[in-house]
Length: 225
Image (cartoon, rainbow, N blue to C red):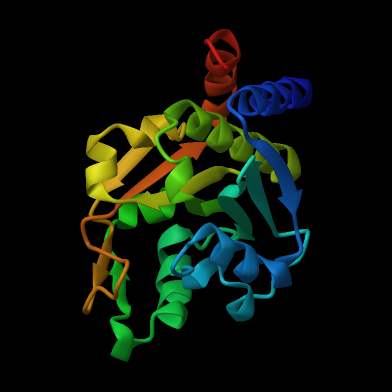
């Protein structure tokens, strides 16, 4: 994808977010993340993005924080893992087992080998999306925050895939499209006993690098703000 086109996308996202009352900053101060999340009212973090469980650097991760007149309004994060030819399935089975030990309901396996083999090399996980309760209800702001996350990640890493996990009810509401993902697969994680916050009803959603130019052009042509 053309670098300048993604720069335009990022600028349009920031302008639209300002119109919606959100000012966004990018941060790699990982030690400060838990306190910001507490101020937002976020009850917990997923192990794959928890700073105390991972060796994050400015090279492999970032956070975006949105602020409004009341203070912190929303957050989202991204991490990049270059898994080479191993594929997403083997990588996730290993990393999720560390994050959720068997006695706590560890992941038994990634139940979609065809997806796991297709998704290889540089993979960007997008997660920890949370909006303060009093700031919720603005779908347009979410669209722009997610597109901004995709654009920052694309400029930073030029990854092969961006991916996330979504609750089945949110996918049914079309939120995967609001978040600009173009591919989706149901029931890809099989758990021994799904721990709190996880479910076998989750969907894997993703966007490959080859889809990004079309999505960016569509975004730039559409109404914003």
